[in-house]
Image (cartoon, rainbow, N blue to C red; front, side, top):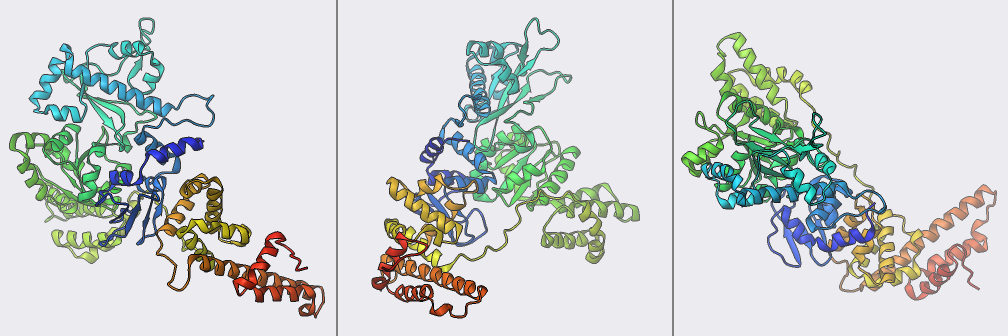
Length: 610
């Protein structure tokens, strides 16, 4: 459990405007900002960010809350993940309640990677032994600015370069092994228990979405086919290949703006794209594209343009990747490159204009696949047509959207000269074979409407928290039946007593889903309930009277029921019944009701009128 003071520090250092602006481009940095909502599609901005309150709220879809809630929603993460993301961004070291336990392993591994990357980068720039690596980068025409931006480095051709550095810094060799930077020496542990994983390689740091270095990819400088061209960090507690898209940290803002990402096969392709101005380029890291990759990218974009190598292997990989992105509900285009070219070589030889031309000519994934299949098979034969139809239906079956499937069937029918009805009939078994998408949170069932009077009460309180004393004096929390309305009033009372910030009091007593913060954001963003003929104080007084009348009417009905159960027919004649009726009547006006409220405040269950 993260201590309260640490959460407060993270919140203090995480201005909500700056945090949201790092995910989506906010139009201006004023006190109240309005933009297009990142959580639903809209043409007219209804998403607001309130710098003073440090909250966001969308009037279109109802999303809202504090900075933690925004990160939870945008990253599709739980509360603790959001805390970690914001802590890393703000430079706050996470400390947990049990300080006697081990240090936070994640932060330690991140720190080790940052230091190692800086070491490799300095070595590339200054060490005479790195001359061959510098020559390689110059040959690839990667500019000094690009080398700096991607923090490219060099691992010398030594088994103990990083080992000796770690010892000089008193770093744990065991932790460096856990980080994937060292390898345990099982053959000659007597000579050295560990040795460097990366040797004589150009080092490309791998960053997560927040820009923290979590691994490396090392490119060999040897012209030896028996040596792996690339060596990547192994899976570690902070590095999972299926969750990483290379350069997403650099490109995600432009991806959000353009709603489309360029997807390449390799990191050099991505670096070349970024250097040429194509800053939405990303790539998988040493693995095929997975459902997780597509889900992550779908947070930022609606569509992707795949630009893979032009050879047969690259074309086949593009079709497979397209199916993964289609399964995530994204639109997919595939670009065709000149024979023998990849994004890196095309831009290097012919310039950015040639690459832009290839992007402009990218075709929908199904068209690309059909073009390949028609070039490889003869659909004039029955067997050839069946093979092509089967492959096409397998691709169409990946998309979860019925409208998109219908459009793709019509498109395929036109290209293959068969009827759409026939393809629809043949499609059903492929829908069953399609790998199901990870279950996203099902739309919540419509919540029961909150009691109108309680909702009005907290809306007035949100508009003028100074009136909380009036509520505290005359309205017990037990009379507020709605959980969030009651929690909001309780937080306002606590804040008033402590003389602190209301949003901080809300944060201190919120659940892990930040439900209260979201509710508070909707209250603070609601239009003012104050009319021209009444003040907020008068409105709150009227609502207090109304809620008490409702409570006394409930007690009167309960009294009637108990009397009937006891066989008494004269309940209305009893003193208790008459007293409740009189109090209900007097609670219609503040001047006559206030003395009754004072009595109930003193004796909530059974006031005596004296």
